[in-house]
Amino acid sequence: MVRSRRSSLPGRPAVSAAAILGLGLSVLLASPAADGGYDIIQYGKDCARLIAEVPPFDCRDGEIIPITVDGKEPEHYSRNMTCDKPAYLPYPAKTDGQCVPWTRIRVARDDDVQMVLYCRRMYIRPKDSPFFDSFEIIMHNVTTGSTCFFISKNFGEKPEGDDGRRVPPPDEETPPEGMPAARDVWATPQQTADDGCIFCHDSDPWMHTPWIAQTDQLPADPWGYHSVDVGGPFAAWPKPQSIRTRGNPCNGCHRIGSLNTCGARDIPTFGEQPAKMLQAVGQAPHGRFGAKPGAKGEPGLTTAWGAHPHGWMGTRLPDADTDLWASYEADVRDLQRCCKDHSAPGCIIEPIEGKAAWLTRETATKSR
Image (cartoon, rainbow, N blue to C red; front, side, top):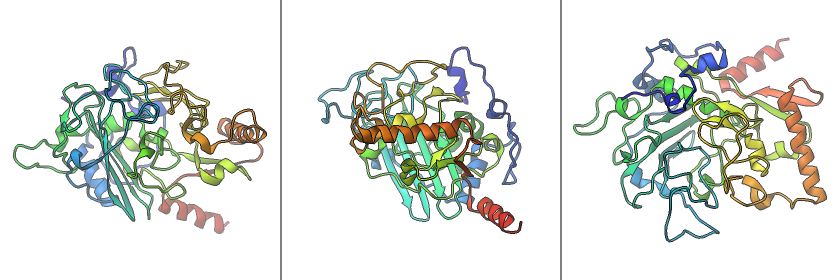
């Protein structure tokens, strides 16, 4: 059954991303309108043309993301337990929580094309069970900057899970006999657009949270081109910008995106999520599924590192109450100032875009 994810959030109307954002951005591919003609097969074909074809995959081939308590894997896992490095993406309340073990991830390519396949566990099952609670794909063309996101229809709503022994490519029109079809597995483009992936993936395609950084299965392209340039409902997504100030050491390692990296955002489907920039330095709570504006973090999940005082960055940050920490904090505040007011003195604001858009902008600048 095709569903609207927003229906799982009581009291929140099912509205499109276009209505939420109020934007009318140009469609870069000749795709049908977002009001029903653009299906998962066409979206899959567009992404294959822009980036690469997705192979069918077996979730059991992926590397397991560890779930530890005090640095060790516990003998037993329990529902809604706390852990050292919970999953960043908020899970529905009916699941067993963000510390469920045995999520698997695999890099299909990491060259001029980067492609990562996720099989997420939200319910506690045996380690070798082939059933998972969400399938996800992020794919990115390093040369052009094109980026695509895919997520399954099921996002923790079925305690029995979905069979991950053969996850179909999103553009596969006819599966092998007896195998699940792409249209049955993958969310529609409109559902994926409503999930608002670009809000969190605003700095670049890849989020190196403590949870996923425990594996080697994540590419990096922190300063490269980055653009969701398919059409259909994705044309309504905002275009992120880079926020920096001259000489700011934070910008020496990170590109700061103008959306959820900069500040708290009410993300379609997931509710209000804290600023990732502040989560990184332990000054914002861990997000919750469907959180309403102003909602507090859950006990034990105050940051992605549990009780660790330095958030995502851990011991790479100086100890609190030191002169060096005071300097870091001032740098973060300076970026926050620019996040709130792009026209503030000393703020350098630039588009995060694909290569074609960058070349067009550079050509126009030089011709003035």
